[in-house]
Image 1: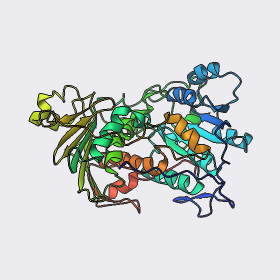
Image 2: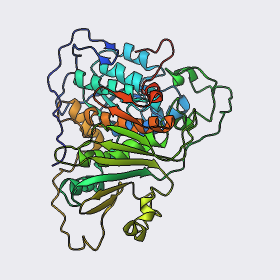
Image 3: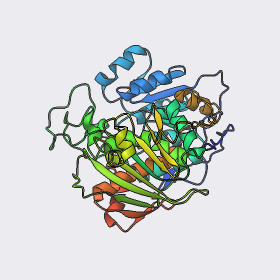
Image 4: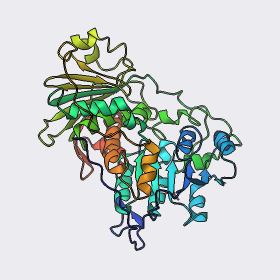
Length: 443
């Protein structure tokens, strides 16, 4: 059966001066924004309205847009023009203070290194939160956000929109129904060579339309560079998480959903990488071990950034015959079961070997077609069922994605105690699990 979705709390949680501290929120609960009837509109603030933010603004435009926030007026110009009259802020801290009590929910679409602070400030105020992936810039940030959401009772959704794709849902149903037997191995990948931007970054004067200090946010000051902002930040470790963070949450979602995964117990780098200390790679391979779950066997899951996908696409006769490697961009996940294989992507799937499944009758669909991805979050914020990618699900998934970067960057594996958030066997890994902030940005 598909993973059950918890029901979002309808009642307003009573609070007593809860504060953000250490590993998350204090034990006392925060006040969640009051539930609204389905016919009422939410008052939403959008932080980051250029780039991906433009699409997210359009996704929630059925509600009352009461504030925009962006540090780059040029990138934000298209959204500002499309929604005239919505107040614009450059600093979300000022926005929260000025509109205190007038916001029900927040949409965060900033670069990876600035997801955490506005998200935690929103949840601290009991505001519902839609956040772009990856949830945090580090495992520690992601865990704090997951715990904050749970304790505050706010509705959350991580921007893993492909969770709604019919082919993804069908692949999950086929695996869960036992169509390929017990699954003990999964390969996942992004067929990309993006990464390794020009280094060192060439500096230049800060453009008039950009507040560079606010863009840097909690990270250390450095001169402006167009090799970092507005887009290539995702390939710098200080600001982004590479193609792993960019695509990992979308792709690993299929395996996590189908196999009910949470925390791996072992993380390893595959091969002999030579990581750069400041910029992300164009190629990497990692491996996770997951313990047995509800009668399912131990699982080995591979994640990689490889132009032609993993070697098995070329080496396995069935996959080579399908030219899977030449179509690595179409596919991104391979389930290997005791009774066959399932190769899938976001928009297609195939059961293999074809001859074996030629007469196979697929089971009836049992996962209900989902509501619009944004509407799921909006409905949850009004007291309905939790959204499909709420943080209790997408938090552990994001942590796993970020652990892939940790093992790659440290050139070594480690045992992982998920519940206590501890790595053992690789002292360097511990250093990359936690984010550090410049003065004035501590939470």
